[in-house]
Amino acid sequence: MSYAFTAAEHQQILDAINASSGLVFNTTSKSYDIKTPAVGTNATPFYQILSDILTTKLDDPSELDAATVEELESSLRWINVAIGANSGVGMHSAFIRAYTNRQGVLRLGSEFTAEQMQQASNAVARNFANSLLSGAVGLEPWTVPRIDQIAKIDAEAIGEILFGGELDTEDTAITVNAAWSGTLGFSLLGGTDFYR
Image (spheres, rainbow, N blue to C red):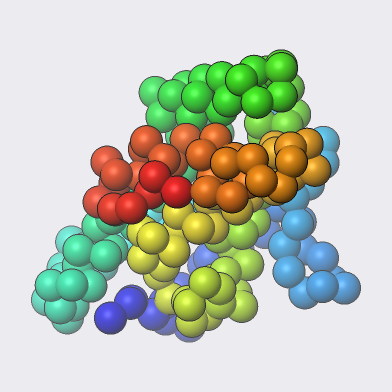
């Protein structure tokens, strides 16, 4: 059973999304978009409030069943990695950006620019925010996604921004997300089957 955020938590999350320099609300589509140029922007406030809320829930899990606790722990691990990765700080960011750059060299013949990297990172936050607001990949609105749902949200954003339109549609970077750093990293966050 997934954890559903309370009405008070909804507002905290919306305030944090709106405080994130890398995201902007599109009044036409009623969803969030990435802000460009992206260098110097991030969605750290959004990720931080999610981390704070889930940490508080896990500090007193008495109202949660064991399966929900396990799901929240995996999701929290990813959110805590996302804080550093999206802000460009720490070992997780260094690994993700180095792996992604190597995939750019192997598949496209050059590294990605800092702008492209940050757009892709902010697109992950955009997908996550929009999935909370509207639901996605089998996810009800305002519920914490499972780690496999987060993987889909994450991989799709990277493919869209960095590889979409650049590679043949049959390339494994498109068909099974082979160029995505999560093919290695997500197994360490409590998930399985992230090789594609």
